[in-house]
Image 1 (cartoon, rainbow, N blue to C red):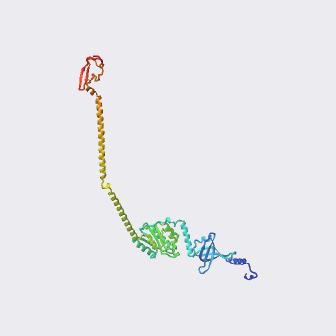
Image 2: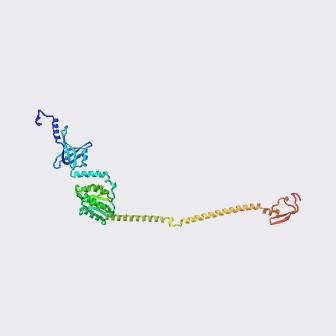
Image 3: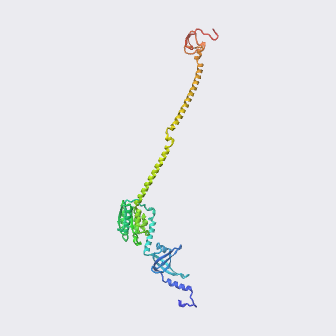
Length: 407
């Protein structure tokens, strides 16, 4: 094609770009391996990835549809992948691009993607919900420990628990902490310790490792056993940067086995210091309360009514004597007034009394029937009559009678 052109007979650029496009696209789709070094997600349906060769400084830009990118699982920069790509040339710009038809993580990337999918499924079921995590007992009666025999993790837990709380009792169960049998053995001891009513807490401890080493602690069966356990479970797997799925469902995640020992039992010296301080504060509070009560009592005792309890009665006795004197005066006054009234009435009665009339020389004549005789017509001659005088009575016999004016 290049021989058919010359300065006098140049070929149109569009034809050359079209020829290149046809030649490139005849390559078809091909699977390639590489490392994702950049992810540029767009709001539309097409996203852009930068893929670099694992051994050489060669990198290309991939266009990746949303469906392909989502199907690959959670991708992170630095992950190894295999991609089904098809080279293409844009007619408008002559730019070479690679369309990604399929994308799959490999190696650790594949493991991480699978773990991420498991995490999303378990999270949707609510197994990571903080509300379902149980608080650890302040001072467990017996602590179950699942770890590798003679491992640094076992030593770290035992030494630090004994240092912090010497009276702590541990039930240690040894299991393989990596490999195909790890999840099965850990699950077996977990069920046994969980069924023991004397065990208040279970610790699963391992001293870190690679993603592959820690993969058994993301086993779905083991994770669900931990979530269903009736005893609080502490996960002490790996180091600060390691996060197997077991960490997310456990009631407490400890960054290291040493950290787990610090968090499952209190420190005896610190608790003793706290108890001493509490006693001191209680003693000060009681002393302060007693002193305040004593001051209040002294204030009450200093009041006049308490210093001289009968002082008030003396004033009341004076008032009582005064009231008694006024009462006597009032009674005497009313008695004297009543005596005068009685004397006046007695004088009046005496003045009007028949006895007073008799004293002036008058007499009262009474017939035999006891009735007073006021007229002569009431007496017959020879009738007996009684005359009442001032000093006695006279029995009389009526001789004759005469009307007023007759002798």
